[in-house]
Image: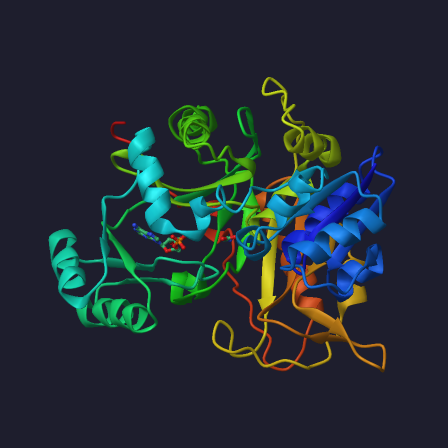
Length: 428
Ligand code: AMP
Ligand code: GLY
């Protein structure tokens, strides 16, 4: 089987790596990819958000399957164009990707499907925003109602800051969703869907804030680990029953069946599980940890989903090891990143036992250096028999890598390692 992966980041590097290890996949291509992906497979410099360009590349390569990584090509209708051309695609249509692209749409689907989520109001002007903020009280949660790469959300106890974010969104011509604050540990559960059937991957936890102790602004994600040994028994089954299947049925009922990854971003609150957000794709950097543990060949699962033939009785096989990945970001991220620096230590890190480095925002220069070319630059993955060993491996890799201004968190998976994550699940 020949597979074409669409996207430029660390998630795509992890998907490419997993597909390359699949004995039934004999050719993997990526477009546009990055400098690290280009070391592993053939990359193609096309505009990933141009549906016609993706279709024509897939035809040229005789791809049996196209896997779309990021949200932007999905929202641009890349999956629709591939379906029209008769090419199997893993990833939702533009209409189904609304689950991620519009927070208001996702809330509407959840309400219709009775999926547990935070109470919320859509606001279109300052008065409505102020009223919603005061109804829910502090801490305030204000979300830009559009794609914002995880950076459109402000969670703050400062009412003025919350209102200012809403006003900035209105000024840009947008609307906001204002929500009740969900208290409790967060979990990312990726569910592979074929429109009707669904298979969950192993749960992961992501670290959204830029600085240690969850301080500073939100980012796309600064690290992750999987599995989560602190989850209550039956957690995944409960999410499938109360979240994934009702959502799939509702999407089907609306004539927009969902194929691809239903990313369930969840909080485990005192009153039970709640959906924080849906995404329509694999999470980044959770995928780097999750796929590092997957033993079932990935290509067959994704092709079955693309063809509507997913066997939802299939139990995926996972390594008993734990995976931790730590993102190294560019200077000034999540604000405008400083690009261009040469990255030192990649080979040394990749040479360590139980460590591999996934590239995100990297490029190559004329001197043969790998350079910083985006906000999140690398994700260093460590595997180990337990969380301590996996953390030690990941951080040993991080210690090898350097460039001026590089930033990473030192506390990825630390609370879990110390047994400090508390699940207060009083009732459902
Ligand atoms: P989102 O883009 O909706 O995933 O939001 C980004 C991050 O903001 C989430 O991962 C949470 O950490 C936080 N967040 C979003 N919504 C809420 C909420 N209702 N209560 C608490 N935290 C939230
Ligand atoms: N890590 C969060 C996301 O992929 O949206």
